[in-house]
Length: 118
Image 1 (tube, helix red, strand yellow):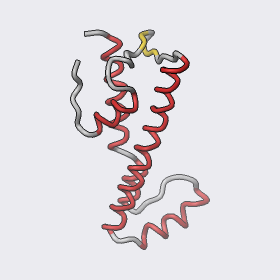
Image 2 (cartoon, helix red, strand yellow):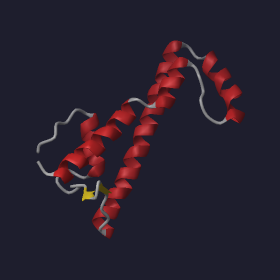
Image 3 (tube, helix red, strand yellow):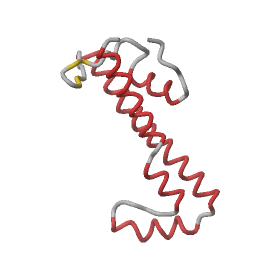
Image 4 (tube, one colour):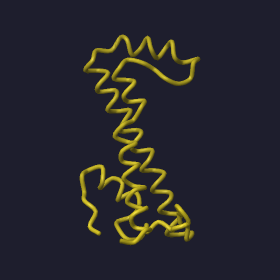
């Protein structure tokens, strides 16, 4: 198989794994705030007031925001690829970003369980 295609698939699949294991969302579920020390005390107090169900719902929201952020960056990279001829190289090999549905669409598709067709 083409190395550029393999590297591209790995790139997208790693982003999917990152989004499925959002550290901030996992910490919200646990009722713990990790981040800016000046905000920690206040956020921990807020999280402690929430029920397990409310923390789970808030964690899902945080995860969705994280996923949307990844999507937005990928959407911009796709624009750069299409309009400015940008390419991403790993191990001195250009990722085969034009082989599928577009970077951001491949990311969302893989998050939804799509299989690679090549």
